[in-house]
Length: 130
Image (cartoon, rainbow, N blue to C red; front, side):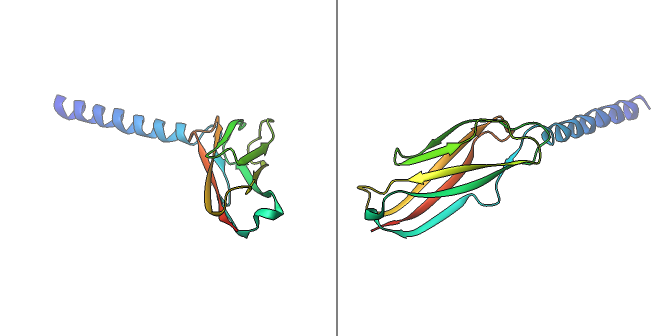
């Protein structure tokens, strides 16, 4: 009888811990975007810089703060607001690519660092410079 009581106690302890962990995952800031990739297609180097604006949404329950944005190349420049994004609200991140001296296909990754629960969030642009 004592063994059954001990086993039931341990089972409740493990189940309670698992429920608490899942509950913690659903709180806080969560960064999301309806589209994380953009294809510029064929662009002409002579036409200069090209830009695309991504929409970022906070689907969490706490304000989202974008701390930093880095790209895989100095030819890619982000523009974004440093203001906190309230739960359920959106902001824009504008990515500008400079094709000067970069003929051929390109793929650039942009890492968005925030206080969101998932850490870095990746955006990607690609295309071909002629």
